Length: 355
Image: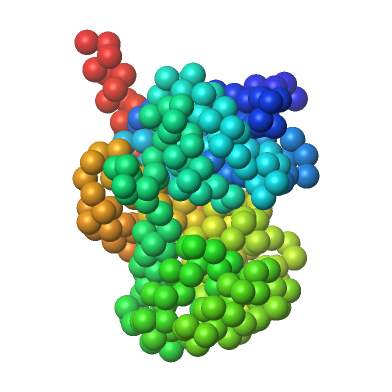
């Protein structure tokens, strides 16, 4: 297989290396038909550089589809920084990374992701304006986690509406995997709505906090997938829906904030369908963070971001209806909606460019 076949139709992939700071990073730009590529910078200690590239390519493609379904005028991109962020994160490293981003002249805009923070984005901003998610005191939108969590919350509501014909989450049992910033805020909204929470995370302090604050039941990480609950909400790293976990599921809904939840999209979406488990496609339900930073680019403010995030409820109901009507999986239905919008906008742009 050639290098270009491995790139899965990506427009551009940039390898960044700065020996002085220890930076090794990959920027993947999947598609810019709808606008500049926007996607966060993930800092992770990958097993290999090949794994890092695979993650960057999958995540950037997901961002293209996420922006398209959310109705945003953005393309899809993502970057990964290779290494342990606790050991390598420094102002020098992020400023070096900022210079690489700046060299792309706006084709890629970065933001916070797993392993990076608002402070890291501000270090990047010393070198480029092509970064969002910086703190409010310098004109940014701040932490996008509450908005991402809210989008996931209304997505769970839509899935419950689809399966139980009610908007109420009172008494609904939800297993939340991953209590980071998004997971915490999701737990808060679920608790306030009357849901019963089961939580799991390698960080014992995080689970203890939500147990104390929201009355959640803490479950060992290796037991969460087999719980008899209504909703499984993955909010940590991806690929948790796989050959090992699917036979364990007793839930009727999978709806969470993690990216790339299906290890093998086509295969595992079909298996969930056969089991009667309703899957809320991840790039649809977790679009709140992207919507939040897009509002920062537009200058439209937090209220507009919150309002647009509410649309995730109707979008998911539309996807569920399309899947039922055409007898396809919800993953296929979400992809179809995204591809239709990209194609229609691309055709319009091409017509205007030839006049």
